[in-house]
Length: 56
Image (cartoon, rainbow, N blue to C red):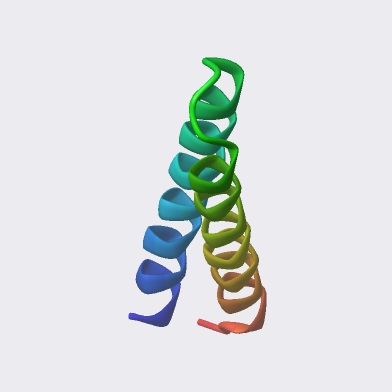
């Protein structure tokens, strides 16, 4: 169960990082893009950590 939740967090982190990067390159408001990228990084790190520490 934990590895599934870790995978979901990992995917959410990747989506947040990509969306923030695309939003930043389109010339949108930089503050919004940075928030997306920070949240994406947090979700990505949490997902990777959860997957690495889960033992099945």
